Each structure stands twice: as C-alpha cells, then as structure tokens.
Length: 514
Image 1 (cartoon, rainbow, N blue to C red):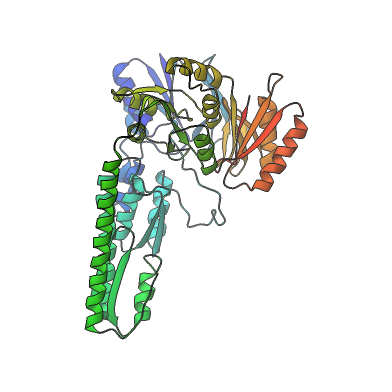
Image 2: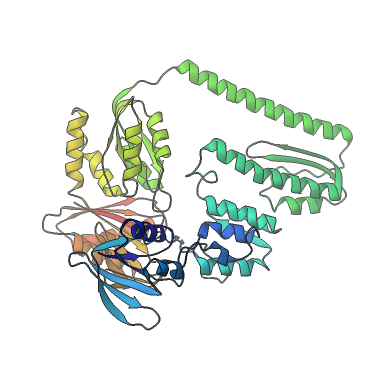
C-alpha cells in the first residue's frame, strides 16, 4: 500500500509515525512545502523568554529520523493539484522548478493553517511579523533584540505567552484582541480573569513604583475599568506622561494638595466602590423578583459574522446570537452557554459555517433537558433562508425538514483577499488578489474586487435563479454597495437584486443566489 502525506508539521508527523506502526509494510511518501518538519510553533514564546536557548530545540522529529522508518520525505515540494478520482497528484519541486506526477492508494492531508492578516495601511512594513513557523521564530528573536515596544495582536495561548516572554525581557508590551478577554475561546472567564489580573497587577505595581520615585502619599484605587491615582509630586507632568502609557486619562486635577484632601480622595473612592456594590445587589434582587422567563415552544440560536447580519437575524426572530466568523469560531462551550440563555422547549441552532457544525452537534448531544436541533447551515445566506422558511404553526420536526430542504437550494459566495501566494484548483493566486469563494471552493480570482464578484456570480446564476442577495462588509461604503447592486441589476434584469449591510470583517461581500 502506497500512502502519500501532504504537509508534515504536528498532524502530519503524528500520522506518519502511527501509520508506520500500524502498517509496517506500507510505502509512505511525504510532500512538505517548507524546509523543515515538526516545528513546535507554540514554543516560540519559550525561546523569546530564554526558557529554551535556541529554535532548533523546538523540532521533535526530522526527515533523517523518519528515513530510519522507511519514510521518504520530500522537502520544498508543493502539491499543485490532486485528482481524487484517479488517485494522482501534481507536485512541484520548489528548488529545481520541476513539475511531476505521483500516485497513491491512500492520501493524508494535513495542510495546517495560516494567519489571516487584515489589509491596513503600513501592513507591509518590515517590523510587522507573523508567528507561525520556524522562519518567523528566527525573525522574531532577531528583531526583538533591539525592540523596546512590542504589540501583539491575538490573545490566544501563543499571544498571551509571548506577552509574558517579552515582559521578561523588559519590553513594553501591548496586547490587542477582538474579544473582551484573553483566551476567550479556550478557557472560562473565571480562569482568564486570573491571568488578566496577573498582567494588570504587574502594571499597577510598576506604575506605583515609578510614582514613588517621583513623589509620595500615593493612593491607587482600582475597579474593573478605572484606576484612580493620587500622588504628591513636584513634577506632575512626569506622572501624567507615564500614566498615558497605560491608557486614556480623564478628570485630571493638579493642585497643591493637603493631607485632608488626600483623605477625601480615599473616602470618595471607597464611596464609589460601595455604590457599585449596592447597584450590583439591587440588580440581582430585581432579577430574582421578576421570576422565571416564560418558555417558548421554539427558538433560534444563530452564529453571525457582522453587525448588519446580526440585525437581519434578529429581525427574522433569532433569540440568541453567537459572534463567530473565519477567525473566531465559537466553541462547544460557547454554544452551550447560548442554549442555557434561551428558554424554549425546542431550540434550532444555525452554525452558518461548516467548521462550526461539529461543535454545534456536540453541544446538542450534551443537553438533556431541552430539544436541540442543528440545521447544518454552512453559510450565512443558508441561515437566512432557513429562518425565512420557518413556520411557527408547524411542529419542530416539520420545520426541521423544511429548513434542511430549503438550504440545499441556496448558492453562496464570498469575496475576500489572498494573504499569500498559492495555487488552488489550478488557479495561480498572488498575495493581495481578490478571490471569489463559492460552496465548492475558489471560483474567481482577479486584481479588481468588483470584477471578482461579477465573475463568481456568472458561475452561480442559472436559468432557475430568481434572487441575488448582496451583504456588504465593514470595508465597503453604502454608496459603493448600491453602485455594485445597480450594475448587477443591469447584468441580470430578470432577477431581483437586494443590497443589505452585513458589517462583516474579512469578506467584502457575502452573496446568495436563489
């Protein structure tokens, strides 16, 4: 048996080792585009923090070790195309530029992932780095030697670990994330609160130490959002300048302060804390008095990707919306939390993304006291179509059958941009190109955004089509969207064209053809 493995980092390496153990007589060939395998990208922070002295220690296997098992490892080889029916693949040697074919009995695809980098002015500057592979690790280590300020975008495991590592090196670190808290998709709030407190407490201690170096009579009172500072100093400008490195300032007062004023400030802070406590207790008491919420027969939970899409879902009767999308797929725990909030006998879940369907199904199996039905919507347009075809008078089973049938009639597409050079489905794609992605993959590529949209639509519209729905993203103005809508109406005079604000990131347009 001949086995071909495409990609050889974590999953690829593990697959090869296990396959060789299970099928020792098999012939295994690896094709890897990079010049290394089995690199522990999650260990880059350990190298930054000097826990591990060099990046070479982050490799846990090698082509040489795999060769001892009888495995052929082809580095710097990119798979251009796969013919699944005939079990052949086209491969390019990136060193010699030679293109050749190979065959297989079994195929293992472990293609890994790649960060999505939003397009923004200055995004191509030298000191904007990714943190994914060995080359990135080497570059991060080298450039951090002279860096004083470090900004990390993404507060997952690796991002948080990098924050700690750079702080250990004495860098001033800023952490940015779209979520309200760090590691939001991995840990519950009570655990992430502990980690956040470690960071904020350290900042607070550093700030207080600085204030002590320029003054005395320091008072620091903090709650979740605000830190109040009082200091006696002969140079208040230094205190203000330092405070600005931690956030925005408000209600500043500079005065020749007496001891009585210091005591008043402390009492005011204590009064504020007591007031907040009383307000929280009153809110809790009011919730208890209102009693249980009336249970509905049927309700909806939907994953959404933008502000405008949220409003559309709400207008169609969605009870609970889970923020999701290409870069932040909700977990099973997120879906369970949403189910808990909804008071209904039967709850329909609309994942609206093929990558979220599994998590939704897992959540459904874990809920015993409610009837949870997952409608396997793979796109937002499918989710909207399902909601439109919901009939309150029908039973949950009848609605489930009708919605599942209807989503099969929806053709979906998205327009986005390429983050790197690649070849997919024999289409050569350059970084920054616009891509039209349909239900079956990439179907249009162009340097022009609107032309990409039109080419994609030409392959989705057929004689049975009656409606084109266009949802424009947060980088598209209303004027631009309306102009595109008018052009589509001219191209397809027999079809209705609807233009709606979606507000989604990453995707300039999300479309449906019905």
